[in-house]
Amino acid sequence: MKMRISSLLATLSLMPFVLWGQVIIQPYAGHLFGEMENANSVVKASINQASELLGEEIQSPGKFDGGQMYGLQLTYNTHSDLFININVGYHSQKLGTSQVSVLEPGSWEYRFERKVELYDVTLNLQHFLNYSSWRRLNYYLGLGAGWMMLQADSYTYSTASMLPLDSRGSFNRSIFSGNLAAGMRFRLAGLLFLWGEGGLQYGNFGKLEGTVTTLEEPRPVPDQTETEFDLTGFFVRGGIGFVLPFLR
Image (cartoon, rainbow, N blue to C red; front, side, top):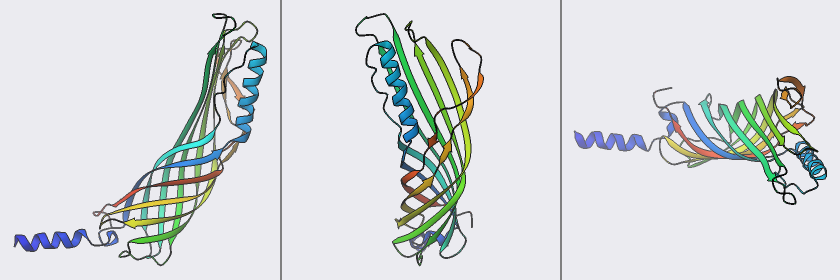
């Protein structure tokens, strides 16, 4: 009897995951290649202006060029070749530089920080190319639409008499977004598979609304960014997928 049960369990562990259930969890990590040209040009102009006023070269804080992204996908198989997918993702990047006077030590300190955080909730349709649960490798094309929210924070501080600054800003905006993708799944066992995909995502936010504080006005004042934020670009992501066998 024990041998029969063991044999049955071994057989079930090798069965395709779709026979166990239809709901699939897919945590992932990836990279967003969204380079914000306008934001980078504004950052560069601000640093150049500070360098001129302070009479010393300020080190570059870097530039916005995308970076790591993390998230979770919930997938449901509605048809042999068609899957519905809900994606929740997060991406952030921070720039910064801090400097004191080299020519006149102790005369001034300068700080410049910028941070963006991207939140993404998307509904995707994935069409597999002649999908087979027994096949080790399956390919698909995806189309998605959803909601994206961008949070941007800024901090600029200077103790120099020729450039007195203590400013903080907090801005955000939500937009409708979309993406195109192509991906694959590599089945490991009955309930597990590896997956990866790459694609193009739309994320042009334009100018953001928010508040800013300054030396002259320490209370938050409604404001709009001079910078236009565009995170449209390519992405790659992947991870492991596993089925919830108790949900059919």
